[in-house]
Length: 396
Ligand code: 3PG
Ligand code: MG
Image (cartoon, rainbow, N blue to C red; front, side, top):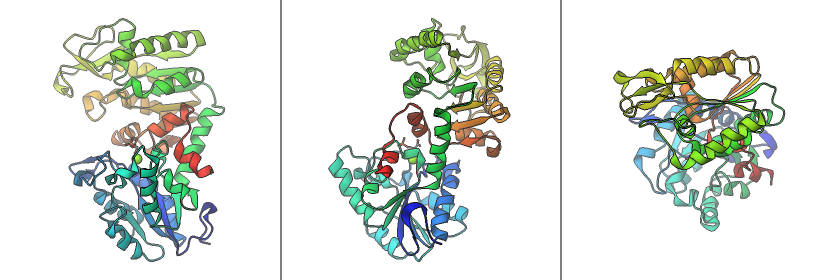
């Protein structure tokens, strides 16, 4: 009793848990608590084992100094509701409040430290600076559990350096995420279809490169579509465009053809006169985007074609919404893809904060998907075949 992973009996010990509690907020209210919910099982298991649980996490990208708009205070409240027990909140990360809060914990109680990125040491590129901050974090605990899957691709103090300073273990969430990603990369059942969306091609280059050798079909939606359309010689009006990626995209289109991987692009687009202008939303052919309009979703014909391509798959990985799903006029492409993922006979994986939030915002039952990942960048980097510092360090 009281054992957690390879840490032995944690009862009475202070265990620092790195969770990814980076949730979207609007006017100070949490709009999607998926990451908090995903963090609960590990925190609860440790608390039930009698540990004094000290959770550390980040919110957004503050500038290495306290900034009230990135406070984790609302997250502490929500975490407490989900745990069904109060969560003590430290108003700093490694200062007087943190030390006082941690000393006040009884066995089985949980504390959350203020945003770890309020300290410049957290994200410093200087090993010594990061190390000094990690020493301070480590002084608050007797053991470390790495459970913030969304940040394991970051070489940051609370993810990487602290693991070198304390007995450490992989948390259940990270273990489950890695297990699914392994299934996607080792021997995926075929057909293997990958759907990529989101705004920037430049974020997806590595993964596209890697998947061209592995997936059977690559479906492209979201803002990055326009760089592909432009590469094919079409005008894209005022749509998002990464001019400097056109050459690279052309290379992908050629390589896909040579390697027998099908790249499916939308044939119709929902455009509007300006960003978010639902009143002017209309469907045009992907090859005929008016000069004064910009594309904000894939069109209905494309949504149906993407769904048809997804349904027979035995393995699907999806990262990135197809359009500006927060607005009904631009949400149907994302809905069509999400719906198709729920219908496959095989493993469907939704990767990334935005697609995961989209699935929930559109009212889908999370249980209808094989796996909803809490990490966008982290899962993409894993699929790119990159080493994840936050995982490697646990092996040492
Ligand atoms: C995310 O939201 O993708 C993770 O929490 C990582 O955040 P970051 O990209 O700011 O490091
Ligand atoms: Mg995070």
